[in-house]
Amino acid sequence: MASSASMDAPLLGSSAERWLVAAAVMASAMMELIDTAAVNVSLPYIGGSLAATTSEATWVLTSYLISNAVVLPLAGWLANYFGRKRLLMGAVTGFTAASVLCGLAPSLPLLIVFRVIQGAAGGSLQPATRAILLETFPREERGHAMAIFGVGIVVAPILAPVLGGWLTTDYSWRWIFFINVPVCVIGLVMLELFIHDPPYIRRGTLRMDYWGLGMLVTGIASLQVMLDKGQEDDWFNSHFIVMMAMIAVVCLTTFVIWELRDDQPLVHFRLLKYRTFAMGTMISAALGFVLYGSIVLIPLFMQELLGFPAITAGFWNSPRGIATLLLMPVAGFLIDRGWDMRGMIFTGMMLAVAGVFAFSLLNLNAGPWSFVWPEVMMGGGLSIVFPPLATISVDPIPTHEMGYATSVISSLRNIGASIGISIVTADLTRSRQAAQNTLAAHVTRANPGLYAALTGAKAYFVQHGSGPAHATQQAMALMYEELQQQTAVMSYLHGFRLLAIVFAIVAPLAWTMKPRTVKRRS
Image (cartoon, rainbow, N blue to C red; front, side, top):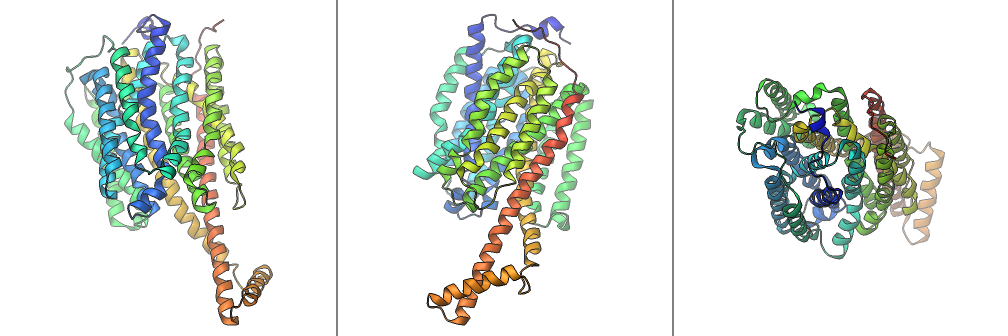
């Protein structure tokens, strides 16, 4: 195990060199995050262009996330086998090539295939870039480094819908993928100039655990299929869903046991023996669940119920990113001066809970400004959560294990994101059915308010030339349309409350992490 001194020692002595490394890895990580989040706001357009429903179009998101989740836990092993610099450059190149294919895809099945390739190529970007930053900066500067890195990690998925909305509205959703080409060129140049492998990387000396890899791929793929098809197939009333669930449980459980017994594991689950790391990993999974669940819900709410164009929906998602951009460096400043990171994480999560819950108070009369303060609260909360969480979670991890640790955290965060997207999508359908049953029970002539509204609507149509029988049908159709709108609103608000509850339940875990003592910087 590495000594404490070697653990805290930066790989580069010059401050300028360290920040050049930070800029290089941020360019690579943000490319992936911007592209992933920009797709969200374009789902209705992708579905319409490729003759698919919105539910089917969500496979464009989940197919990417699941292939990404397969590669993420392998990123530490891949970096040690191929070399971190070579892995990053290959990942950036592969991600961009797959992006071009996505932009050219003539059908939804082919688009999903290309997204799987894109997700696999981009899977190693986030853990590798974070590991490089943590190794490059000394221990007392990691909070500030993680804050700057967090600006890209958290802001990119929030501001990207503005880019996605603009490209989709003024050009085509295909340009969301083509835009990666110039970013790739910049990223590759910076990686070539500034990134170097640390001395402990054992390139080419590790063996491939094919049995472990097979169990991982099969288990995660089965889990994702179960989550995505469960609502459509009525969950565990379907033999297919039951089979997928059993395969996922068996493969993933066996995979964990297999890796714990292997002397050269693909995934270092033994790192979870550090309580702070284990709790940080759980909080990261919840962060992915809530962040990506809200990224799906908010644009759909704006477009499907309030009639916002894609560019407008993207623009009015930006206050969350702006709040994060402004407050993230403040969080890094507080960490570097010795503030209790556990308290920062808990406070930020509860502020984010308040923001998400505020979305559940909206209605069909909501305008663009109705989203501003909920988004500011959520963005501000996330800005307080990410830097201390990214810093304290890996605090007990030796430097030579840092790549494996960031792979585990990134993997579970993406699995949380994938589960969040699947659950909120399924919850929209289930809660809409429940809301419709509840409201329909009150649609009777004995309801004085409804009777008055129906009578007034019928009179309106008669005045405009409809016969009595036709006017009655028109009035009933109008009432049914209003009923559908109200049930849709109730389903979205239920989804926001679900996200708030998940974050509120997980928030107290921050206090189970060990406090970190860092010398205050003057």
